[in-house]
Length: 237
Image (cartoon, rainbow, N blue to C red):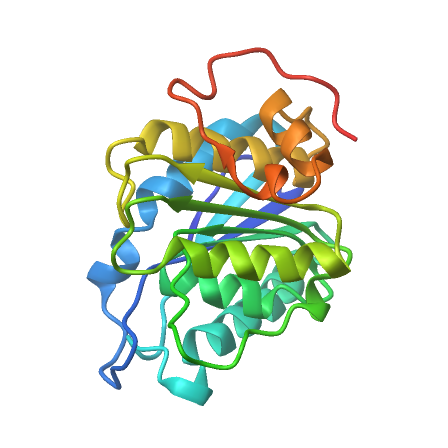
């Protein structure tokens, strides 16, 4: 579990990298390395608030069915955060398989918020549990042209979360695919906005405030505007 640190630690982000559906090979440093730019961007944005970010190194590369190995690793990492830093607010930020792991591990008592970016949700399986996410702030981001993970599945999951937790919003990145390459700056800005707003009492941006307040489907199909992150913020909650 590698770290990117700012000053004295007052809040923590755990970044959960992408993975594979099935693989018992050991987790690779390359996979974890793909999450470092996001971790560094979050620390740069939250340095003055004492934010530290860790990237989780998975034991195995795959989700591996009912084993849900990345979710187990996320829960272990949350325990490690408590051991190292004590009672500090924690945000789980996951990408692809890591996004599903973040949602699964979001019920850990230390978790304040969860951000799921392009969550991998395989079709034809039992719906993922949601009751454990009550009391957390939850953000989902999904490209409408994602062919690796159906965005409609994340919308349905968001609908189910909304029934037990009003503090969820979901943004759609129109015309972008699974890796969200076309709108990477906006996705990074949205993730930082959400993480710092839920961890460090910063003001959330107007689109996030509006999405959290809007009933379905509006708040769960909020378009991520080009240039997000350049406007003024408004007071949270």
